[in-house]
Image (cartoon, rainbow, N blue to C red; front, top):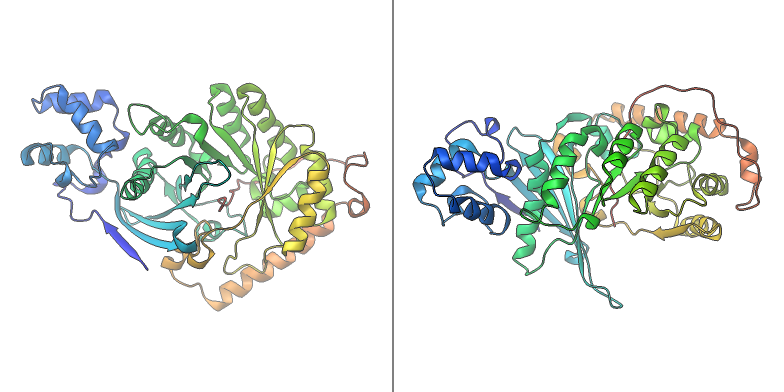
Length: 427
């Protein structure tokens, strides 16, 4: 069943798009606004409670304030930067896909996933959030890439996705335990906003999530990884690989043309050394494209000895691509080859497929179906490009066994290119 939650009825005297979100306002800005309105200092604490610890979704519901004060604050701050949210439950209630319509009409997605407690582990509630509306870099197996780029999200627009999920969980006497920046967009291409949002969300005086329960993903923005390393946060870094050989990764993750995979892994390893936080690598398995024994061998050569962890994810079905998920037996064989070399491996189960929980799918549904000719052309180009990429990788790699100490394939010549984006982990 589809559930609609809306804050469109909130009374906002000024144009909504011109107002900053209250969730990104720091204490100085809040204190200044309240002082200008002649309010006592304790109002700042009441305001923080309303934003971070109450079920209120609009100024009209902040009943600790007078109607006049609520109206004055509505002149200065938008209580919620999300105008409307559509919820689609899946997996027997274990997954909730949210499509958020922002004030200017842009669509972004978040996914709330519940993991029941078992074997001494407590129940977890993980939220995947977006940092951009759409994506400019266009990984061909990602629905967000097909949407194209809308714009970067403001800090409050990132944070308010989390506030929405927290309010829904509170009605069930539950709370958010984990947060991942793995939704629409490439987080390290909007790093200032992501850093600000992460700081707010891990601030004990505001949302209060533990730093080690937050993960930021990237498909390989090396300068962004290096900037994170200099900051030495306790957040988890998740790197979307999807291929270990440059010619193939150039196709699957176009960002690789600018920063090749070896440079990405080197930067991630430096982050791990500086922070003491194990890096997580994501690898979407696509039938006949990146799931061969040669791919497993190349992945082992890239990651062995680094103390990192690999998450294998069968590809989520995405409309308008010619590719499918690797079959279960090939997923198991790939995982065994990598694990035998001493690399920690987890095979992730896709969540919410019945409601299109892969990144960008619900937003793509709202934008309308492309023409049949456009779909056919895109599929034809991907088939040709993947065939060319597979011909470009060293053919002898297919005959090497994992862990035999075989020499590394030669590095390709110098490269240039554009940026790329990773899909969201879905389980």
